[in-house]
Amino acid sequence: MASQDPPRRLADLRILTYLLLVLAVLVVVATLGGLVWVGHECLLAERIPASRAVLQALRLLVGGMGAAGIMLGLAAVIHYVRRMTLAFEPAGGDNPSAPGGGESAPVTMVALDVPDAAAGTEGRVGSQPQEEMLRLLREINDNSLLSEDQKRAKWERRREQERQAAIDHVEALARQGDFPSAFRICQELTDRHGQDDQIDSLAKRVEQARAAAEAKDVAEARQKVRDLMSISAWERAEAIATDLVRKHPRSDEARQLPDLIVRERETFEQQQRRRIFADIEKHTVRRQWKEALVAARMLVDRHSGSPEAQAVLPKLQTLEANAEIQERQTLENQIKDLVKRHRFDEAVTLARRVIQTYPDSPQADVLRSQLPRLEEKAKQKS
Image (cartoon, rainbow, N blue to C red):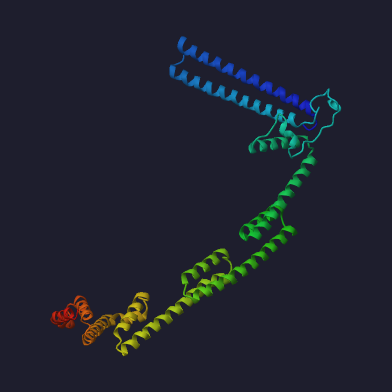
């Protein structure tokens, strides 16, 4: 194939196209003849049953039309290849009578890149798929003109180009921080090209970049976690630690950060429980039942499973009762103070609130009997 000149090859392609067209027509004619014969044997000679005749006719039709279609497709492809070859051959390349043509014309290699002048030829390319098809066809044409040594040299150049493109891609991935993908491509390069100083150096640079990025990420995450722990933002601190472990799963410092948060949170919560428990005891000793009840409820709500909460829980009902008694006594003293200062409207309002809030209390019973008198004095003053 490589020894043939372009005009001879183009003539062969044209002959092959015509041959395929003729064969396709013969196949169609033979198929039609077979259908006529099957119809004659079934309808006139009655030698073939109708069901069997229909099956044979379908087989003939599918096989014949399929074979003809394949031949027509091949003819169209060969015709297209010939047109593309004509479009990109030098002037006079397929015309023996043209100047510089004929048997003495040198064979010119077709370049891989499509020249701009080709846009106005018969093989004009208008879309991406057509450009790719054109490139492949031209490459096939190029390879057919190359000797074995030239093909081998071309393959080596392409292999080196692909290798360099992969190296550039690894360096770009390292700059973007996608170290797993960079290491994967380095391993693929080693598997494909074997041990190589350039690839080994590239892997070392990627590892150095990964280590530097890891150290920076760990330092920044630790600082953020410390700041968040100082304001008790434990969930946000845990989220940062989780992201760090996901980004650097092999880092010991990254894996230690979630454990540090857990320990610090447990220490903080233990200190909080002990402080609240101490406040409960302090208020109880001072008979500040309302303050003791607030602290006890806080301890039970926030740390229900802790030993401190379990110790306070049996005392909660007593604290509630004492806090209620203290509150009623406080309200009773306020009503007496308002009466002494002749602020009967406010005394009536507060008395009604005590009766409504604590209807079964001793204070409510006393105020029910005093409420009409207080209301009368409030009217007189107004």
